[in-house]
Image (cartoon, rainbow, N blue to C red; front, side, top):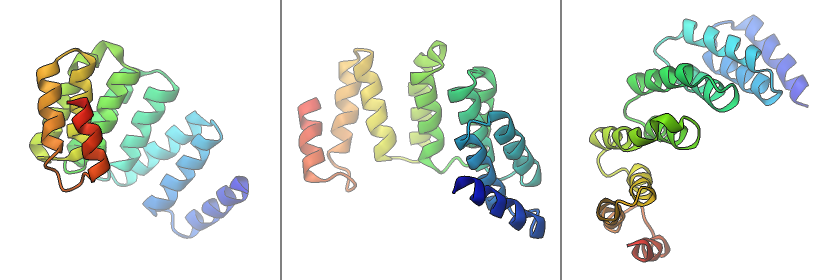
Length: 169
């Protein structure tokens, strides 16, 4: 099924070779089949076609960081994504998670990334929560409590989630 999808995308790209979304779909399929070098080539091509669009860079960051272990390249692509799309929480969360789960040498920079994101997107519940858990993980109870508490006033948090936050506090 996915190989047929790839053939269909290639056919559609012959008719519309500058369609960014089609290139991203091809890259995702190549990644799905563990063809990381093929996916990189596709995402790099999409980035050359549309250098101001962030998703190709984000996908490159994920491949280099999560699958190939090239942390320097992954970090550069995450930072490029933040530069291009600073008003989306996923760009900060992605870099913070990369530091937490893979690039352990940069673990201490997680709060810098999330605080930068919160400057741009004040009160973002996802970043606030991740920051609270980061502080909890390093034993900074005061900051953890502070960020868990900030979530209690968020309109994005339901009653069950507020109960869980109170337990954390």
